[in-house]
Length: 319
Length: 319
Image (cartoon, each protein chain N blue to C red):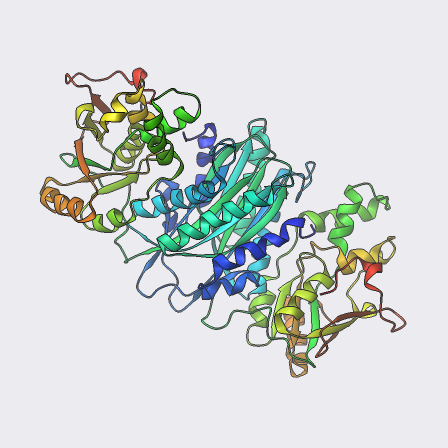
C-alpha cells in the first residue's frame, strides 16, 4: 500500500506530540517510552464510528475529546494516571479540512487539561464514515490498580456525580422536547463526559471493586457483580439524579440503563464511609451510597416504595 | 452509547488473551502490564480499511495477520522484540461469522508464531467497510532502539530479502497476467509479509539508521535520509530482485516504488561489512549492499549503465 493522501495529517498531529520525547517527533516507525520506575502500566483502547458512537452534528472538537475522555475514564476506573496516547484516524475523502482541524484542536485542548501527549499512530483514508481509535497508556503503583473483581457481600455500593443526563442529552439531540434553557447542560454532558481520574486515584486501597458507568448503571453493576461473584441491591431513591432530570419523561430508563455517564461505580467496606466523605468534600464531587453488595447473585433495583423493579421496565439484561 | 451487538466478539477474542496475565481476561476496563525490568517500551499503531489497505477478496485469515505483521515490522525497524498487542475492530453488520472467525484464527496463528498475546481493545459496529487498528507493544534495552536518523556520509546502504514481489502480487490480483505457476508466491508475498524481527535485533549497535520498506524503497530511503540530514546514491543493478520478478513488465516501478515489501533498509559503516555477512548467514536472510550515503541531500538511483534515473520514470517524489 502507498502512504495515502492523508499523510499531511501527520503535520497537524505533530504539535500534539511536542513535549513527549518518546514520540520522536512522529518521525520514526514507533514511539519509545521509558516506563516510569516502580509503576505498572495500564493500557486501554477504544474506538468510535461517526454516526454510531457520535452524532454527525456533534461539534468535531468534542468528538476527539470524548474519545480521549472515554479512554481516560477507563484509566480512572483502574485508579491509573494518564501518561500518553496514540490515535488511528480513518478519514473519508469528503471530510472538510475545518472538521479535522477542529477535531485535532479538541484533542490539543484536552491533552493539556489532562496532562498527556500524543505518542504516535496512523492516519488512513476510508470510503466509510469517519472513525478513530485511541490507545491510552497510564500508570499505577505496583499492585494498586483497581479492578472490577473484589466486591464483598456487605460492601456499600457508591456512585460519583449524577446519572442519566448524558443519555437524556442524546435523546434531546434526537428530538426529545425539553424547555430550551434546560437542554444545554444535558447535551454538554453527552458530548463531554468528565473522567473521574482524581477519584480513581483516591479510591486506591479503599474501594474493593470499581467500574466506570459507560453502558448504563445496571448493566455495569452487573459486570462488576459478575466479576466479583456477588450480587447487589440498589435503591432508586438513593440514585444521584438532579431535580431537572426527574422532570423529563423516561428519566428512570436514562438513569438505570442510559449509559454514557462515565461516573465511577464502586464497592467499598462500611469502614470506608468516613474516608469517602472526606474524599467527596476534598474533590467537591458528590458520592452517593446507592445500595449494598449481597451474596445472592442477582442485581435488584428497589423502587421508591421498596419494591423490586421488573427488569423489563428498565431495559437491562439479567445475568 | 450502548454496548453494541458485537460484544460477543469479546468471547472470540478472549482465547487470544490467554497467557497474558495483564489482559485480566479482557474483563476489566484496561489491561495491566509490568514493564520488563531495564527495558524501554516501543509502541506502534497501524490501521487498515478493507478495500483500501486489503482487498475484499483477500482471505480474512491473512488480513489480520498482515495487520499484525505490519506492526511487527515497525518493531523490527526499531530493533525491538514484541510483547503484546491490542485491537480495535469496526465490524459491518453484514459481515459473516465465518469471516470474522477466520480473521481471528489468523491472529491466533501469528501471535503464537511471533510470541505475543492480545492485551485488550474494543469491538464496535460500523455502517462502513470492515476496519481495524492494532497497537503493538515491544521492548528494547535502554538506548538500543534503532532510529531513522543517524546515517552518515560514507555509510553503506543495505536492504534485506528481495524487493518488488508484494507490489507485483497486488498487481496480479488486480488483473496483471503472469504464468499461473508464478502468481502464487507474488500474491503470498503481498498478503503475508515477513517482519524482519531477528534482523532488527541483530542490527542493534551496528546499523546507524533503519527503516522498514512499507511505502516503496525510494520513498522510505528519502525518509531515512531526511531524518538523518543526508542523501543517498543507490544502484538498480545491486537491488535484490528475483529473476522471476525481472520477467514482469513494470518490475522496476514495483521494486523502486511499489511498497509492501516490509524488508529492512539500513545504513551501516563500512567496518560492519564482515559482521553483516555473518548475520546474513546466521539468519539465512540475504542482505544486499545497494549503495552509499552521501552528504549531498538528494536520493539518486543509477540505472544499469550508471546513469541517474529520472524520478518521473519511477514514480517517487523528491524531497
